[in-house]
Length: 309
Figure 1 (spheres, rainbow, N blue to C red):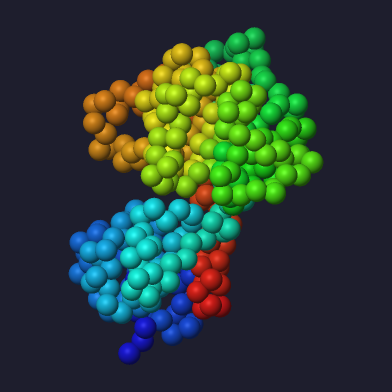
Figure 2 (figure 1 turned 120 degrees about the vertical axis):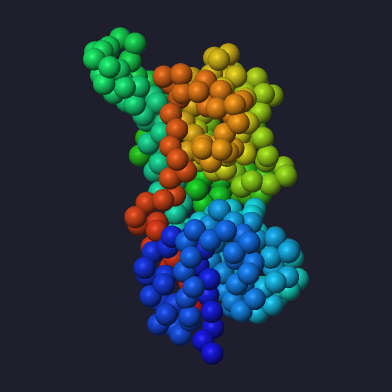
């Protein structure tokens, strides 16, 4: 009987074809729900997931033959990795596969804000040709605070290397990363000196609502604020307050606390509407790590880590 792999999200054909070539039987249900997965996971050897499904102890207890879980992308907060390890299940992720596109997307959000690109285009759509109000801020010569210098934070620093900027990096898990461009900095120094702050943090109990009211109140230079990590790392209400109180010069978010817009409560909708009323706010639908190139690269990374290729 062939070893069975369940794929729970859209994936590149390279992943499916490679697994088939290696003799795996593929169950590909890209929109499968938790209860449906629980019903069929008993015979699975491998499980491939993204950010949609929670892989908890209850699910793992049903997965009596499971040997590995592959997470396409970065962030393992939805997988009970400790419990999986106790059952001998290997867990791998692929942040190396999409970090480049996250870094590029963060730069795109920032340049759009600083150069008033998206807001000026919206004005032209309305028939308004406004120049003075849309005078840009140059990125050159600025201090950019990167909070979290893992794969995506380092990728953002790399794309910034073509600009004459100083990177102030804060990462409690890394040290000895200083270069001619990157300086190690405390959070307090970033809040005091940075013209731009970009978040690249995993979602943990320590980082939940990391960017809260107190975080924004401590900012001294009214920086641009960018987040491409996890929605719950920032308090959406706090981001709105920061714009209302002019504590930040603009905000670019690729992630939201609740990304199911159709299920928003009245208060959540009011907050999002409040954000979108600001011309110096821009949002994208969690696509920073979703480039065509990353789509295949993430598949290759997890297969390499699992020694399948």
